[in-house]
Image (cartoon, rainbow, N blue to C red):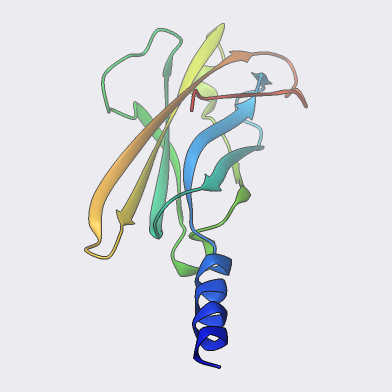
Length: 145
């Protein structure tokens, strides 16, 4: 009887979803000044991750300033409702019209999370290069995992 109780407890632990955000996706082409969906992509992970918030910034195509976001154009609170989710979280954002003369942009996303039992604070940075066009495409490009 005791072995069945132990197996039941282990099975319930395995069923607990643990995931973290490992990539960001944005349309391959965006029309600045108009809303589009940015996607935070969650994948399975070995421990619990509490995602707190994400901030979105934009810079020129060759923007490679370490962990800087560039011009911030949006942020979202994630919290318990949107943590440890395997799959996509989608949020509407708009790149400012001040970028309409650019040919391409780098969208940088910073995701603030707490990892593991000790709640280690981490900011993960994801970069996606998109083109600027007359309309937003349905095709998406994603950051490297």
